[in-house]
Amino acid sequence: MKFKGLMFLCMLMLLAVMAGCEKSEKVQQPNIIYILADDLGYGDLSCYGQTKFSTPNIDQLAERGIRFTQHYSGSTVCAPSRSALMTGQHTGHTYIRGNKERRPEGQHPLKGEIVTLAELLKDAGYATGAFGKWGLGYPGSEGDPNNQGFDTFFGYNCQMLGHHYYPYFLRDNQDSLVLKANAGKQCGVYAPELIHERTLDFIEQHKEESFFCYVPTIIPHAELLAPEKYMELYRGKFDPEHSYKGTDGGPGFRKGGYCSQPESHAAFAAMIHLLDEQVGDIVAKVEELGIADNTLIIFTSDNGPHLEGGAQPDYFNSNGPLKGYKRDLYEGGIRVPFIASWPGMIKEGRESDHISAFWDMLPTFTELANASTPENIDGISLVPTLLDKGKQPQHDYLYWEFHVWGGRKAVRMDKWKAVQYGVSKDPNAPIELYDLSTDVGEENNVADQHPEIVTKMKLIMQEAHVESEVYKF
Image 1: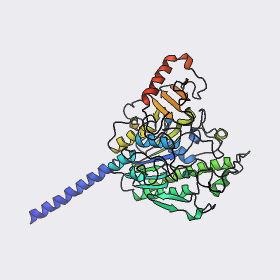
Image 2: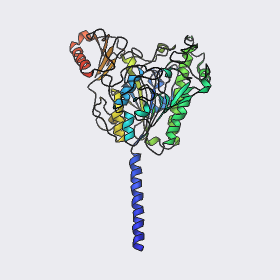
Image 3: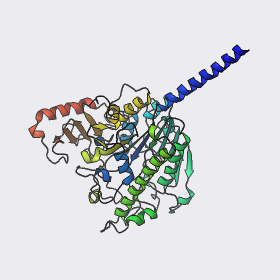
């Protein structure tokens, strides 16, 4: 009996040790929170040079981690930028390369067989949630976020409906959450605040397990609207104000067109103030839950600043020294802020000029999560740079293509940047060349001085583009 009792005790101890090991292994997978601002320019944060307003919480995130100065979005508009993020492929390879609409709600869907970042992390044991704007497949399609690896989705499936801050409904997984307080022209529920509540709830609900929390906020995409308590903070501070006349009623109201805004400057600053507060709330939540040391938080933007809805990026110097805006493939359209913080793992107060892009996120996150990484990707893991360990592999080049506005292509290769516009009409349109080491504003086209570099860039543009069944020049 004593022997059996001893054996039973040993078995209990062994099970306890095994359970402890499993728990220990689980802790090794970091939580990942990826916050994606919408149309936030390179210079729209005070830690990147903004002087007309401040972003103290995002600045503090940078102080506690690493700030990249040469990070690039997936594209110069919303859907393809997100496709590059989710697939680890640049826009010469990724399936979604434009903002193709599907009426009455949603965009052209990702194919079901495409493997996304969310699916890879889910397969590795992560709880996965997305909160904000999707844009990669209409509700119920194979591109629906619930069919692309996200256990939980709350927000706007459709980018067009995501123009509106007081929408009539939001998507709650496969359900439609009607916001009665926004009926007619009412402005009762500011959607980003409701989405933020769900984001914090998700983090709390999954504090005991590894989670991937994707936060593609709609701020500060047009239309320009903020709750009154935030407007009060900035009203009258940016005179002369700019007034925008938009869609304030009729059949198109809250179906894509932007509403009027008589105080565009104040509204823009107020929106970013709110966004900054929400970033601070997320940081505070992981600290409150005691999971900060096992949580990687990243903040970035999906492309350069927009010119719609009354926005005036030049007034705020939203791109700092960069040329161009959203829809451009000059630096202002695609170079974005990128901040990463992970207490105890990422050394504080660092800055990196490593050249990176959205398609690097998939291999970075799968490496950290010890998840499988597909072979057919264009990304390179940033783990060596983030953790300051080992040699960071470099890209041979970064490539973008944009299928509207005449067709555009761009390549970043070391210090060189090539831009080609008008390729839909003329595949051999002139290629502009800039030396970003001395001309970050892309003011001096030096193509005539370096024909050999231009030839290399042309070859890269040809080899990086794989013909698409949906998007053609």
